Image (cartoon, rainbow, N blue to C red; front, top):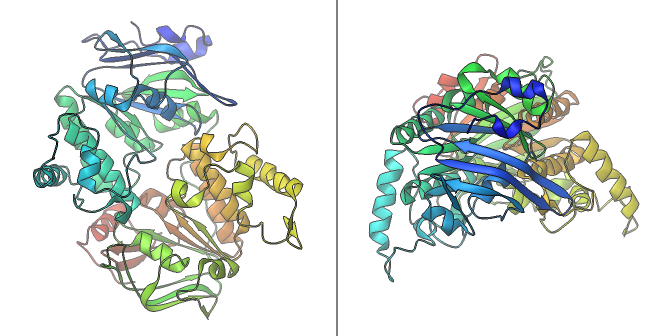
Length: 528
């Protein structure tokens, strides 16, 4: 089968971009004519996919293009309305993730498939059919430690999932695949919480796996990863595969244009920083994590109005606790948090909100949105207490709807209607809803934790522009990100956290990725 044979119904200009299949082998995986519908949404529209032995295939597309849905069909989380799946040339029926695992298919999901009240080890072996009635958990934990050390994915096998940061939970998902020996790996934004060095290490891991004949589908919005990790690229738009390119014969600019239908700026021009008064000040702040262990150890810094302070660090080094202490979601055990000069240490979240603080949380599903509420209601959650959405305690549905429609347009949120439950949106569009709500409500300080995680290149560009607009409007922005390119692009200063301490604060204009990476690993400390 030729790689472009399924695209004959598309325009001729698309066919010209397509490359012929490798001549060395047959596909290890084929998905033919996959169609999947949800209420008001055609997520996959006769989508095709081919994967060859020893190949890393990058799957690109805007948020809502159907990438994750197509992969969820492959791992048995969804049943396709139409289409067929072939593994090693044999037609298969995949009714559940267990069926997929039996075929050697495993997926690291963007929204983690973990049980919070169970340990790391229990989650990794959950559902495995070849375990004894009483699993030998000590032996399982020993093997997990060995794998985690081998692949530089350190995590405590005995820790409960609810005690872990988002980044640590991502590591558990990757370890689950490695532990179970999957032959076809589906990775949905796997490097979102890794340092540059760890991302390169993941590339080496993928190379080692593909050398053994394993294959991977790599969903990412980071163009440098597409170019580094993959051999082939498939671009999806509106549920269909619209282009297939050999990685060595394309470039990030072309791929971004194919995704969003326009030129995308990878570096934004920003105005000179003109700091105003101090909006946020932390003085020797200490805090504990969910295990009762020290998470912040004497953190001190200031952020001025008209400034973006970036926070860099490997997941699990205090970023979550820092954000929660500032926003009133976690108690500081020592130190002071001052907002506009007023002591707000350990004040309840509502008091922090009334101080003009907006919060884009790292956990968009668990903390940032209510899955069973409409898009419009999620957008209104920050402003429903005061006019114009409410008068004298009476909500005005028409005004809520008007606000929602304005935000949907401004942030290009792909939703059938404002009344659609947010759980039916893609992960990237859920993130856009949260961004719209928090940026609209910001009245002084915007605390943004990984705001562009999981967004396509066009949406990422828009988010970064929005953050710069907040800065230029005189607001203070605390930007937590593990994307060093993002921090170098839009931050004015960058503070690096390692094991709960500030390793240094550097001007973004003079910082470089190598120095920041060494600081993130605790190997270098730099004075401001």
